[in-house]
Length: 265
Ligand code: KIV
Ligand code: NA
Image 1 (cartoon, rainbow, N blue to C red):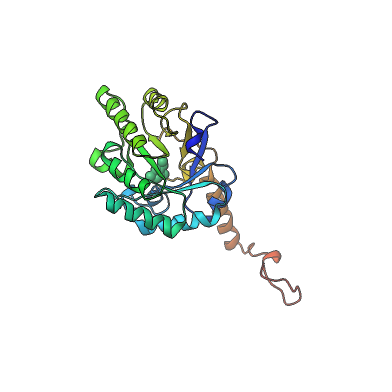
Image 2 (cartoon, protein in one colour):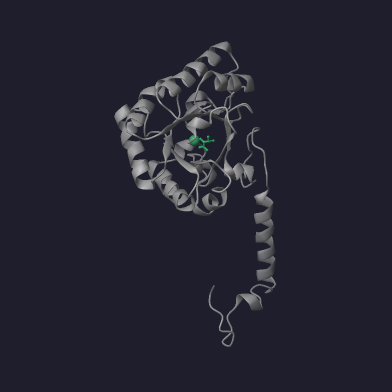
């Protein structure tokens, strides 16, 4: 139960989009988020607006097949919930019915409180998302850190209060001045999950491809690279290419001779 872990041991979260990565991460995290970042990270779209409900469901199903322990949350893509509470409930229901995930996440505070409350009333747990909202970067004029002005800080607190009051079980705080994210964490009674926020948040999340160094574009300042899979994959590919060209691959272990009786696995 994520909600009960307010102020306790930090809640460990990562995104996951595929079956094998979900299998690998499931033992190590409390929560796996099938983020709409999948549109950028795996599909090469410029923003998360490239995500569709079908895309989220397909990746949600893959992650659910690979996860047995973690709480799996699937992002509601842009365009699937903003219009009305009824639209939000219908989309959330479809995501949960077709994936079996434990919860959905949507972006927005005061302006999305009706949607959150309606989905929760329909029996589906909701994670909120406030601060820098990737689905709004185009209308916002780019990626901008929140909480720099007094006015903006007050708006962030109103958003946090609205998300809590609407019944969300936790809330992501993204791209927000550290002290503001820490103050919001102390102010509300549901767990906050930080990304580019504060070490005082009740948990942390990163995009898996960013933290293992698979992202080919520049990563944000808040990302820590725990591995460099770009170099691992490039090295494997260049070694394979050289061995194919020199006929060193396939070698004796990777072919079937009539006498070996070896099966394909
Ligand atoms: O889509 C995503 O990956 C997210 C996290 C960064 C919070 O929303
Ligand atoms: Na997202």
